[in-house]
Length: 294
Image (cartoon, rainbow, N blue to C red):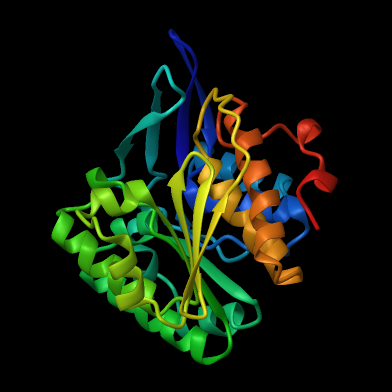
């Protein structure tokens, strides 16, 4: 997607990002073999996005070009405390009709060569019922072939037609996933208050990472809750991309080392460092691999 992020009160900077793209970038920087799957337009902005992803070492061979559509756009409005509001323009987004324009069997042959698929609630929110059903079937087939599914709730209600639809689809897709990322804000947006009951009822054999804010993280694994209170110094410039970076760092390191506490601490460090910078992506020269990889 095209991203417009504030540089100051009077100026916005154009870039290319989005939650899954941010996670893919950080996974690639950490050393994972990352491939991005989406649909783009045939225009200068789409070409620039491809170039941006390639510069991060991301495989773009599975990105489909739709000559009739364009990239979606979103604008970030930062608050004084570093939190933000998002405004989306996606009516003509090529990504919305991705599954209508590709050979699903060919795509399946490609993705089963990977270890995992990462997707989010924002991914689900852009599709109509036809595309969402195709996507669901693709994930089921991929999982049957040994591919892990990693899902981040990442609820932005202004992307959804209704809260009811969001609840239904997020629950449906999270239940087939192996690892699920949830925040307190996600559950609040969905109208869910009793987080323990919700997690136990739906994710008995899953790994759930629940971030409740201010460095407090609750892990549900092997039908047990474990609580972590990570060191939290609130130096915040812009929280955009913090969760995306956290997820990438946790997954990359957890794949190498199943020590959850160690993985949480190092992922939390990357998330904090992202919050200290403007925008979702730390400049390459400031990204020190040794700080974020086990």
